[in-house]
Length: 189
Image 1: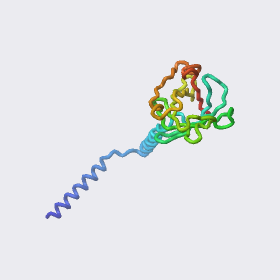
Image 2: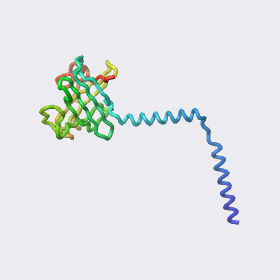
Image 3: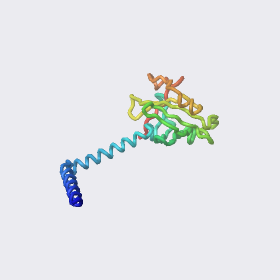
Image 4: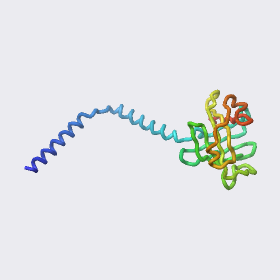
């Protein structure tokens, strides 16, 4: 008797599970493919939000200047150290190099470190192993362009991290970055 009750209970359970499977909404294959693509795109967007906003190769200028002499490459990903390399024709090679320690795209800032052994790749670097803080924002007058200003150089990590934005962004092409213009970075296409 107990065995029959158990078999009946299992049979009823299977019938209910089959009936629920039949009640599920079947998605047409085209909708299923669209949902898959949307999921993949959403995953790529979430992954790319971990990338530094300035990743890539940039032509750099002082303020509104038009004379190009430096190509800057940024490469960083959230949670990992990155690199900033300045390749200047005026110096015949790398004029500076920094380790990107961290960045905050929403704040528009990043902290770099001069490499400990060789410094920032420029002669006479007395700040080997020290930290710097840079603020950046989009250039609204030009597509694929940013303004950058180093507000702290040669500091301890804690000092660089605590440094607030002291720039004035009203006329970055000629002033606002301490006593001088911001640096302008135009994406190299």
